[in-house]
Image 1 (cartoon, rainbow, N blue to C red):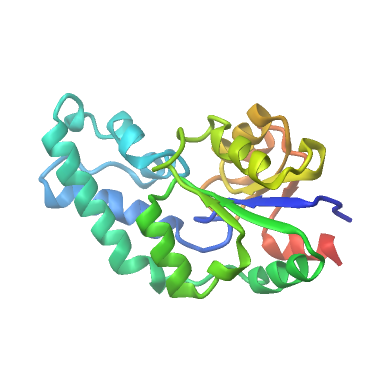
Image 2 (spheres, helix red, strand yellow; image 1 turned 30 degrees about the vertical axis):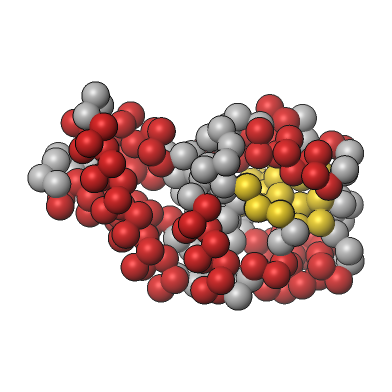
Length: 216
């Protein structure tokens, strides 16, 4: 049974099944701008990080061309705005958040999304009330830099030993390691079980339903 006071959740691929939409948004932007269309696996590899900072790693035509990069990012963000809410939250997410809230736990979010997109998602899903604090890539260094977690720890006053990061990518787990807190990997998002296991999370689960079971 888990015994943390502070639960820091990633959003995409952890609480909401948005991985394919993010991948499709990246390839859509390539097509619109007439660039070489990257593979789904390559697009998936940067999920969780600040998009504007890392997309040039996988779309080389954007390097050294800030105007094209801004156009690409705008097309990508519009695609996500149009399609993100078509996706469901994962099974047992609501039950998990309800249980943790009832137990008086602190719930927060650390995401690679922009502030505007995260706020729209939380408003659209009705899940915003669960989270006392959210951190995005607009306000902090991109994962796996520990800034998001460090600021959450400072705000809540929770000891590192009583805090845990839950995410679906190696970036989430490494961010937790860098901040000195435990990590829980869930393999139903952007990265599979083997990729997450290589990062040595404290727990490695197949899905949020298993997290809910651990709270029972």
